[in-house]
Length: 155
Image (cartoon, rainbow, N blue to C red; front, side, top):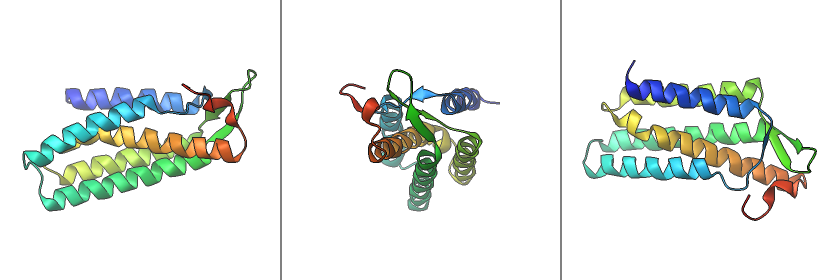
């Protein structure tokens, strides 16, 4: 197992643990935005250095769309409510974990079709897109359900 794979496995375990715990819903997915920016930078370097072909780039775009679609599905199925302090909270269940694993399997599958190193370089983009899309859907649902407690400025 490579260092990249070990780091990815640790990140996956931490994310899955956080997904199934009752947690306050934040308005801005700071970690997701950071990981997305990091992933865009790494992906841009690959494109500029011509490490990938047009077919590879198309496959990466399709993978990003699939990742986002699975994140939207997770955002739609997670439970929303309020805690004792009136803050909006969210919690995933077994299906949330299954959708995360499906998204990860999709990324790994695409990685096998790409030049060496591309999958590792785009892994942060994968995690970032997933977290951002899921959080945006959860916030939209909370607003629709009139659960605005987690939407205070700076949350």
